[in-house]
Length: 114
Length: 116
Image (cartoon, rainbow over all chains, first blue to last red; front, side, top):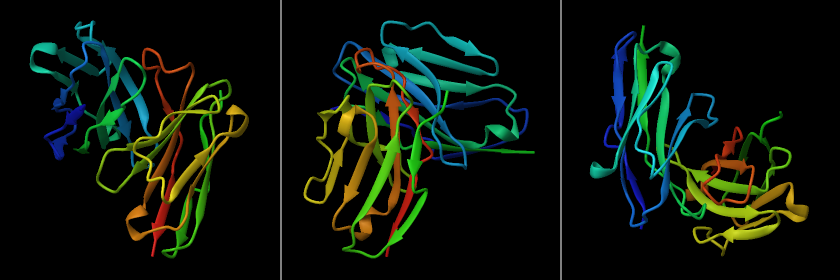
């Protein structure tokens, strides 16, 4: 069975600090997809990134970066120079190659204080 | 491009009553999903449609929950009768193609249900 663990329930940082959100996954599939979503207080889930299991290149998008390490089954998310608007719950998710078994982690609540 | 629409945004009912939620996906999106998100938890997939057929409903409590997607566009999720533990946010999502290669899902704002 597929499983996603986000060990950090809540994180608080002061604005401009860097913060890393951890994600560890379990799957028996050789081909799978990993996602990060942001859920601001408004409640709507916002897609941030999708990564397939064959692409271990790290990715950077503005202040966001993702570190995918298959050897440790981790897909960590770093926000550089955090801002108050980054305050939200962040979910890591895992999906199989057939577009099924979409499993979300429990989420990490990030609070960025001014 | 308009996003995923859901209604109502909020609903309060008493246990044993029935309730229905509506979802209109992004135009042209073949796949539609319903999720249940209990407070403090990640979303849990309830059912997935490809056009008007069910792809995965393994986590749908079929004794009380039902869903349909007539004509492969809009979808309705129903709970009958509701229980206290059904209190949650019900999220609808859609994706562009049939779900090979895990196409990105786009989520609606959700319907917040409170069962008293």
